[in-house]
Length: 302
Image (cartoon, rainbow, N blue to C red):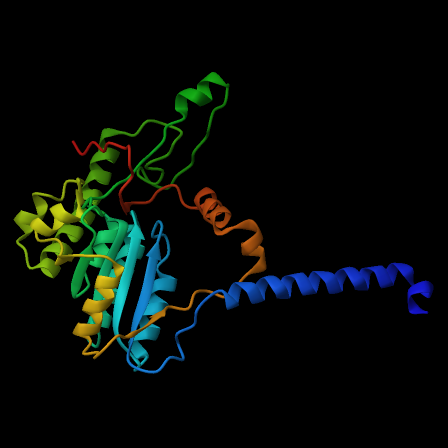
């Protein structure tokens, strides 16, 4: 018998077989638990979801492009549950939504929060829908820096920095920021903030002055935002789908297709996407600007 002649090898084969069965079972449960409407007949409304901090636009841009090229998708709902994020990624998604609007109607549906960069990407849609209590607005730019100079002194550490120009280490946590550096960064922030104001003014057909009057970082409820002209209507996700179907010329109840997410990963299932996000935070660049609403933080623009 093989098992008697090679007990160790036999045991390894058994363990590998059991492991393979477990992995296949978990994957099967994961996929079977998701309803796939891609093969349903009739005109469809596609749903692209933006959840959490906007740190990378790649996935959302790809999903918008796929739906834009799919002739069965007559309209798209951009479902947003995000406090915003990086300026670059937010602007990339904003630009892709505008491209999509050339051929298909896009409705933005705001969930619990669609603030700062979350509102920025929503503003590019044909129609904006939010719940009365949705946290939105927060039109502004945020940059944060830490200074550990005094801590280093207490523990007896010192740092040596070599640089090619006066501003190359601007924002360094190893020293206090100079007045010239603060003015330089404030000019950058003002410029990026102006880009935000102009985008909202153009999409909402408002004057820059009226947008700038409320573009001081303040958050707004969905109800407040609608009264100020930042939204089109109040409603939930189902209302947004209904509006999208009507704008897309769909008769009757539409099939709803959610954008296909990235391929299933057993490792991610075990470790969780939160860990991946935490690692990105740890290894990411320290200097960045954001269209981001951060609860509990006060920003001094003076």
